[in-house]
Image (cartoon, rainbow, N blue to C red; front, side):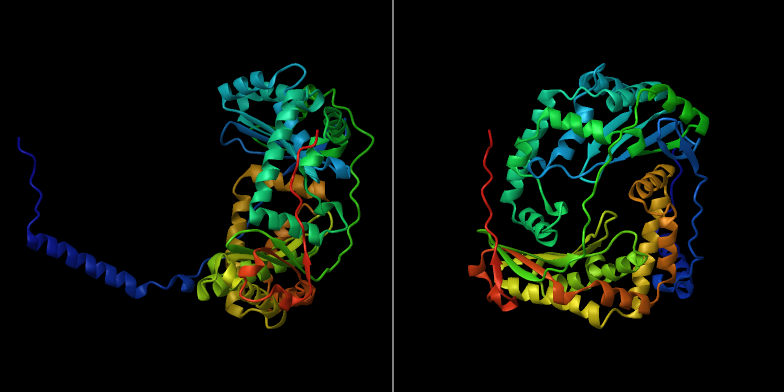
Length: 479
């Protein structure tokens, strides 16, 4: 039997196209433009959260989700600033907890066993917090808890692995010094936090000074149940979680000493700074301290910064410097809060050296405009829609919700911070965002840093004030 012929005559095709055109025209006549479409207000329903309290002093949160047989765990602990000559210790110690294996199981044995069942178990740490994370199928709970407990209670801290991490960090430090952008970001933070450990960064010397004893002391001091918060989500009940923690972490003992964070005072340090780098581009940074995460106006500054320089191609800084003037390869701003003191507001751009001072002028002008004139009602509306829609993803999984609860707890923020921020986004007015710009941006107190070759600049950097030249020492090996 021959296959059935499909009618493909020109008249048939024309008739189909004609009908399609009618349908399309009818639909188009009633369709609104995207901005005219109306949707019901976005509402969030947080899953039921259960609390965990363990005898060893550990506490935390759990969300049951039995849709798929997967469990996620995060244990977050507070850390602290190392001595001045050991900066980089948290990075080395956080990496070595997992990659040095335990007294019972080597890293290779753990890697092979976890890979075989498709599970992950990772550790890392910084100057404020460290964390242990795990993701695995429910059936492998005993295996993962066994390895995780061993890393928490009795890590091996293999000296060879510690040296491997140190060498890796040292190589990264050298590469960062060769990159003008990375160098600028590092030195800019130092300028802002000049009198606080938050401005320190690891060097070849400080990393070289780190010993295995330092790593062991770090672990013994900070990785303690009464200095940690645990979050569990997935295919597990509250009682099962308590039973497994009690079984595998029974030997995890509380510690006596927790981290101490030096108090940070709010300071504006207006200055003009320059670092010579033999490149054809200029890397420009301007900014100052921002705010503490507990500030109720934090969501308003997020809206303000979205309009100023955080909203990709629609933001003022990007639009003016990159799109309108064609001066910058990249341009934007960030306004980050910190729960430990004050965060950092940064406006930045990378441009050709011959346009450096023009780009710097425009960058400062946009900050002054937000501080004075402020945004339009339409810009505020667009920023609200974007940030509200973005926040939906913070509710996309039980694991992400639990991660946030653990973070809020460890940093002392209210557990309903996410919901509070969402309500502020929804209720924010033009006047609210104008106030945020006027109150939290300080054009008169800007710290300015330009990295590049000033001989190529379109005009002297000294036009912006007396220039402080920062000499960058070459990194050398320390035996």
